[in-house]
Amino acid sequence: MSTSTSSTAGAVLVLNSGSSSIKFQLIHPETGEAVAHGLIERIGEPEGRIIFHHTTGTEERVGEIPDHRAGLRAVLDMLETLGRPLQEAGVAAVGHRVVHGGTVFHEPTLVDDDVVKTVAELSILAPLHNPANAIGMEVAREELPDIPHVAVFDTAFFYSLPPAAATYALERTIAREHDIRRYGFHGTSHEFVSQRAAAFAGRDQADLNQVVLHLGNGASASAIEGGRPIDTSMGLTPLEGLVMGTRTGDIDPGVVMHLNRVAGMKVDAIDDLLNRRSGLRGLSGVNDFRALLSLIEEGDEDAKIAYDVYVHRLRKYIGAYVFELGGVDQIVFTAGVGENNVDVRRDALAGLERLGIVVDPERNAAPGKGERRISADDSDVEVLVIPTNEELAIARAAAKFA
Image (cartoon, rainbow, N blue to C red; front, side, top):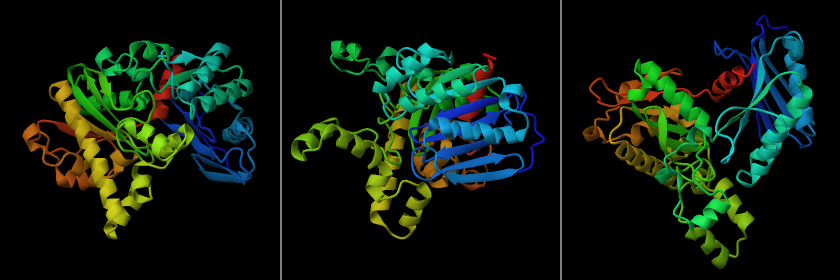
């Protein structure tokens, strides 16, 4: 592989450590240029894989990656092919995506031993994510000890939700003892996208009411008033809210007890059912939207019902947030489905002309990857597509500590 001519000086290495994967990007926070990015997957399995994209091409490696330490070491070795080792190249900082900050963390935080320990302890609130986040920070600090490491929390943006939105109607002593409240997730994306939407329109965010729809395999909605979130669809965990690729979203809590009593299912089995085997996959057999639409074109009734359930739930949240905000200036679609699926955007807002929401069919259907307006000229509400860039947001937060 040839060496890139792009300098890494002043860049931030962004790490997103999952249970069996690590996503990474090396980003210049000022320009947003990604010098390199990639994915390590199937960590701990007999045949792992690293996909490494850089300015001169793509490299892929296949082989055993026994643990996160080996995976990260491999990434650092590959990044060194861009030039000097990172420790010598003037890399400003390492930014770590952390899913759950609980009630402890509500802003970007310089990582030390206590932070790693607390993130690990918060695994009780995010057992699928926080353990890997803590491991990623621990390993990265060992490998890059002389670079500041910064944790950026998915829950931070929603930390200051109004009590009426953050509080569940659960017996208060139990709720307080176990830190049960609405935390919200995808906060880094909602904050970034809402700011970009205001900038795109040339308007002051302080004057805007916005509904942001982060629609990917995981999906969430938020109501943002003057740049401040007042409600969001995900709750204590990322399970609540919209229908997702494999998650149920909102469901009667009584279903859990019913499955336990009638079907004899244990808690772990129900957890797996609700988080990994439901949503679009549970209804149709697929969780990729492109596959779902292909099934619908083939006349698959289950796929059609899955799509209708997805859109129905989405419309309920849009309506609730428009009402909660007392009117809306912008509705913003983002993430994989939101940015790329014409049908979802069209059907989510169909028939809302009396609310001042008019989607232009041609603008909505026009191919495009950047920031764009899809509402009609006579629409009172701007409808926008704004690509999310959580990695850039994390890089910019981390760079402030350099």
